Every structure is written in structure tokens, then in C-alpha cells.
Length: 290
Image (cartoon, one colour):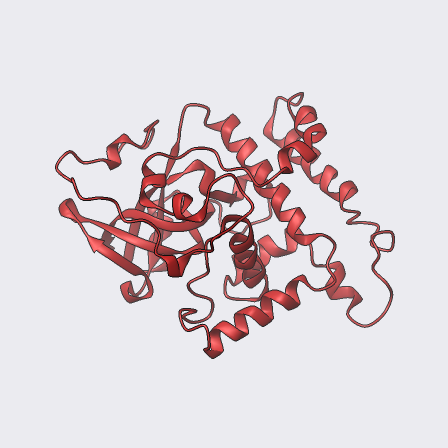
């Protein structure tokens, strides 16, 4: 694979004539809030031939922000402008005006904002913040979570009920938290387009300890596998960093529109220098060992 590859063409091998699998019905919702249905954006076809993803009306509603960002030549300046806009638009420093009333739980609700969710994900993707983020992916992109502190495939099971509870509690009485995430994703896509104007994919790596924790749909020729990922996942751009998280290294080409957040987007928000938080679905990956 070419690290600077500009299209998804290398994912199409000439002798592979089998029809690419679509996203299984059990992994998707029939509706979402973006410009492509889940059955398409979660498919292997989308990995090979991505197009931009847009959450309904967000870019238009915040058009003034993106017009302003165009005037700043450097990434640090744009990042600061974005953070200032978020603070003012969502009243993050004026929670009384946002409707937060004094009383029990005020402190935890005051901390329920987009930086807290991103940091919480980095600390423990199976925690409450991770549940909120996975629920957000479900509602915006229609991709169902597959794992959260246990398998979620049994909708009557304890793990699934705990996931629903954590996600609901994490959103309760917050200050337009899902809308904050909508704008964070949209800003991430804006920055990726500016940083990589001629690229459609990033080569990313994920380290894991057990292969049975991932849903391998098919083993293909050339050492490739088709894997159904959770609806939100952590990757890294450095293979040596992936080694730190497991004995098996998954390597894949991630479409830029499936990057929700990455460390350098807002400096200091994530611990890992090369972490990318990636929206899931079916991916073709190569698997190697340390």
C-alpha cells in the first residue's frame, strides 16, 4: 500500500470478482441523519469509493464559522477560533444562561461537554463517555454499536441494557451535547480536507490482543480479511504505537469522511499523539503479528 495513495483503487484487486458484502441488517438502522444511508456508508463499497459525509444541516447552520475559518492560514489559529466558537455558541462558560439550575449533580452536568467526552473516550472507550459517543454514531450515521464492555449482539442481555443506561444518563440534562458532537465532526472534516486536499484515505493501524473480539466476515486472497468493526474505534497512524495495544496489528485504509476526531485536531485533548477515532462498518484489512 502507498501511504500517500490518493484514491481507493488499490483496494480493488483484479481477480476478486465476488460481490462486496453490504453491512448486515443487524448492524444498521433504517434511518440516520446524514446524506447516505447506513447500508452504503457502512459497506466495503464505501471504503473503496468514499464520498463526503454530512450531518443534516450542520454545515449550513454554522456557515458563519466556516467562512471565518477560511480567513485563518494556520491550523492552531483555526483550532483556537473553533474552540472559542463552541464556548460562545453553546454557552460552555455560562451554564446558568444555558438553563443549568443549581442543585445535586450540577458539577457533573457542567462537565458534560465535547472535550470531556473526547478525553473520556481516550481514557476508557467502554465508559459512560464512550456510550454517549457510540449512541451519537447510531443516531447520526445509523451504525449500531457492536461492543461496549461486552458484546451488544444480545439486545435482551445485561451488557446491552447497561449500554443504553450509560448512554442515556450521559446525555441527560446536558447542554445540546449531541449538537456539540455534530459540529466537532464537521470541523474535523473541514480540517482534514485542508490538510489532505488530494487524498481520500489514511493508512491506519489498530492493535488488539484477541481476534475473536472482532467480527471477521470473510478471509480473502492475499492475506486480506473483511471485518465488521464496532461503530466507533481507536486507530493510530504509527504501526509501532499499535504494537503497544496488542499482539495482532490490523492495517487498513480509512476513508477521510470516517474520521470523527484525531489528536492533532485540537491539541492536548487526546493523550495519544497519533490517535484517530474512526467510524466503523465493514473494512478490508490486513492482519499481522508483532
